[in-house]
Image (cartoon, rainbow, N blue to C red; front, top):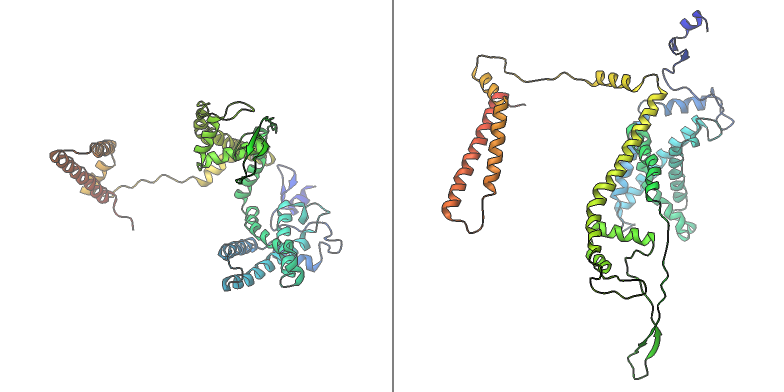
Length: 410
């Protein structure tokens, strides 16, 4: 590119030696669905509508209204009047989402070229929700729709509509991608080998039927508790039950009563098992949860550094720019008349000794409230009451002084 071409092309970056994309997003230089070229009027109109400034805002509003409508439905009476009205609104919401999908397919194409609609997983999710809703609406009221419960159950996928907001909020999308990426590291922590135990039980017992007939002879067998640790799946369910705090004493009792393989339980045979449950309540909420949070934070930082590496600025330069943009000067209130009473009161309440004095009053008042006890004498209670009134008066005086010094903000 010569000098004249550089002057004629204002989008050319002299430092990097490449063109920068400015202005509205251009149409993809590929044929959409093999029939719509980049200059096709229909595709141009679709591209213009999709890239309107308030198009995403309008879709966000529709998603919000759709979510509110889903929450307002009556799950008990499906034929209630409110559900009938909300059903008409659902038709309208589905129509808007279908129009959005069609416009984007016309603009971007289906899947064959880069940047097409189905190359984005979020677009595939949107398409699945819309198509399933349209199929469910197509069979509403028909004999086929009544017989095929699967078709009717497709409407359940409407609950996935709020996920459409993740793509449209960059920060929310970054957090979601970070969580999904960090799950790979979490899976490495949770991977264990599945195993189960087979127990051989010998012996027989008499089983009485309640009549005068002789009892039957039945073989003994070990029956598992509802919550046990014989395999990983059951162990995870047991730990989840313990973590919820509902019914965990019975699980603790069964663990302490356990003995050896092929032997029956004995009361409090393993008292030391109680230590496991105590540690589980303390270690798991504070240690493992912090590990997962740390993994998410680390992954989020790594993704941010990758984005910085792809840009023209390094991390320090970007931090300086962000600081310069968002920095605000510190503001401190001060009475304008330095010779007045208000200024002197402001100097007193804004001083460090005054704050320490108020902190001391708070500590003494707290100790005073802790000095009450049962069956105390009337004289002792009267003294505490008078002291409490003194502290309350001093706190009230503090409030009045600060109102005078700082004024009332209207």
